[in-house]
Image 1: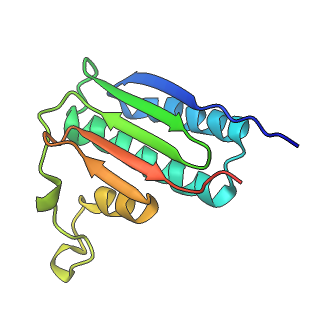
Image 2: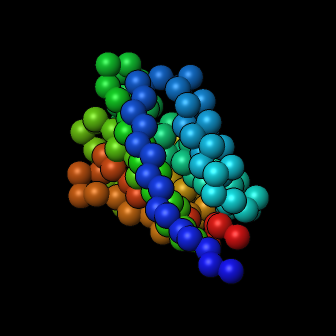
Length: 141
């Protein structure tokens, strides 16, 4: 049997409002159905991506509905790359406090990047800090 594989790329732009997270969730559901992403991979992709997009909306674009968040979903043979870009000024991810440290346990913010690093196999921010790439490996059976 010969299995043919084709790469898939979905590009989505949403306005910076929390309700638009549903658009991203639907895109992940669609790509999962089309590509046989396994259940464990689906959960990691969904939570990690929604967290990153939420951060882009709230922290990057300051919930300014006139600013957009771009989400690119690039499916490979076994992996999925998700790139999220906002129109904000950026930030330095290395100075975000560790939410697992006792002094930060009760903080209301700061768990998003921690979650993203635990769920994705790779995470990389651009120099400006307004773009993040999440790589989820071996998510397709």
